[in-house]
Amino acid sequence: MVARVFFFLLGFGLAVLGFTYIISYLNLLTMGYNFTQYLLFISKRYECIIALIGLLMVTCAIFKGGNKDDLCLIGFLTLKDELRALAKEGIKLIKNAGIKIIMITGDALYTAKNIATEVGIYNNKEDVILDSNELSKLDDEELKKILPNLKVVARALPQDKSRLVSVLEEMKQIVGMTGDGVNDAPALKKANVGFAMGSGTEVAKEASDIVILDNNIMSISKAILYGRTTFKSIRKFVVYQLTVNMTALVLSIIGSYIGVSTPITIIQMLWLNMIMDTFAGLAFSYE
Image (cartoon, rainbow, N blue to C red):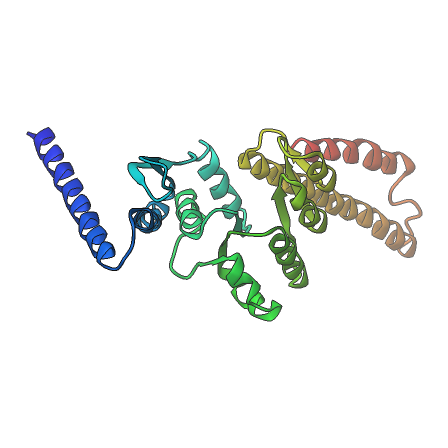
């Protein structure tokens, strides 16, 4: 019963869609359009619908005769690049680390929006999505105002990446940029941290600071984790060293005023510096 209802609804939907395009074809014929122009018309209309769900569309037709306008529509093909298995998790980890993500892509606006929504970059109505033309119309001051909410730049050009890096650095932000092509090299070089893909060009790898061998954003989240852990461990060790040595120094100074010539003996000082500091350094190294 469920299968019958499904096929009935599917057939009804296809019938409505076909009837709609027949009516639009008849309307265009009355306006003097030929079948090729009609084919382009429905391709553009259908492409907008397909882009909304993140697919690429290819229109297929064959020649029925020698005339270039004598085309017969076969159908439409839709293509989609599936997200990597760990893409969503990687994006989530990076966002939880307090890092803002801006997706810069050459895809169409609606396709980029759908992918950003699916992966978790574009979440609410306050988020801003621009294409390259809209971005070029904004001056730097206007761009700085929308950067906190900017999530996606579609149909991006290589100079758009470099401009975004420059504006973010003017705002005293630490910028990381990913890329794989020759055109990405200036932005990778200009960013504070450049990530090149392992499958990218040698020019991009030379311009970057880190090469992601597996082309996976999860590796970037791991690099952030290891970098922050190392920085915090070094900071903890420095604080520990300053605390111990400043305490020994204060005791040595105060001791001379209260009549204690050697409040800390040489052996005790060696113990503090060689034994305690060594094991503390090893502990923080493997934290």
